[in-house]
Figure 1: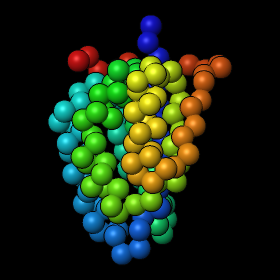
Figure 2: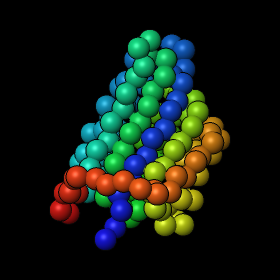
Figure 3: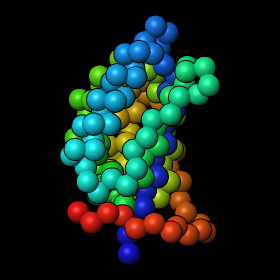
Figure 4: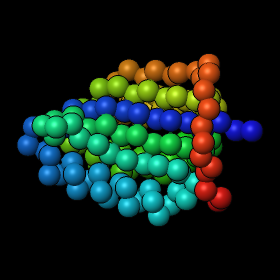
Length: 131
């Protein structure tokens, strides 16, 4: 059985770029929704003063994460003009190619620290969509 992969990144929204960042977030969400039917969740959050953005993605497996990173490159670069990536955390097993793709994305968006976490205990009550 494959394990889900949870991806969380945090970024500072560049001063004066909030409206543009929000537009690019929406464009990226629409792009991903249309092209990645296996992705369980893909969400952008802002903190209370709209200076920090957090992305949360839930993938059914490493292959979904790898596809997302391959397809999303141009959209990540566009959004990257509006943000400074601070950190990336990945929870769950990734194939080596997917892990390298996460590192490459972090380098592309400014060289943020990437941390990979290994599950030691827990359970989930969700089923990924068929696709």
